[in-house]
Length: 282
Ligand code: DGL
Image 1: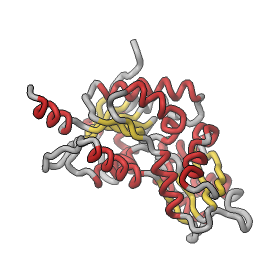
Image 2: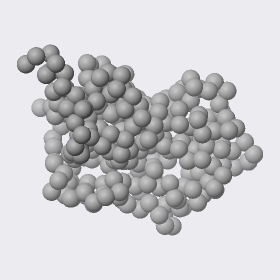
Image 3: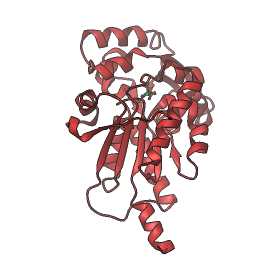
Image 4: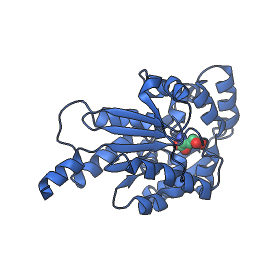
């Protein structure tokens, strides 16, 4: 094969997208929209969810196994569509997957927050592991040193999202308990970063609690933009014009993945189109 043919073959490979569960489908949806011609392979490590309550070492080990599994699908790039894995493991994942480029969601999410705020007061809600690691505060301060960042872990939102309980009294009670302290007083944030890919499906409920004046931002669209730029910069974008394929892989119940994943994707996913995979090392 000539070097030119090899380069074309690489450009036509799929992009791998990974999350602990189905939350990353919010990013997948944005990628599908921004990059209609690219093939996408989504892996949800549903057997080991949640990542957000686990230690940095465990999350790094799980995420490394999951993303290495994607290499078996000959991906040309990997998107870590999980804030927790991006927050604690982006460096090790880049190292483990080199020379395949790896893109996380924290920096795009932080930049979206900085762009949206008028007062410089930015709230971040995320999993416990993401908040503890402080990656959002660092990324926001890198872009806006004077920003005031208030963070709150909202782990129960992950369970509510995976359960499909995105509206109603249970979701609202959880949102009130988590968010009311953050939005008390005059120094309340004017922007709230949804720092977990599971949270955008709860946006309606969150909005009810924080009020109309607060801007809600998530990293889905900004991550898709970052991927688009990286593909073009590294000459990795496909030149094909047809509709790209989307493939789903899960480490546990394909039926559940399809049922709840459809809510995140905004269109039905059939269980028979989800492949059950084992990603644990031998
Ligand atoms: N979706 C993941 C994130 O963006 C977290 C879910 C989990 O706790 O596994 O942080």
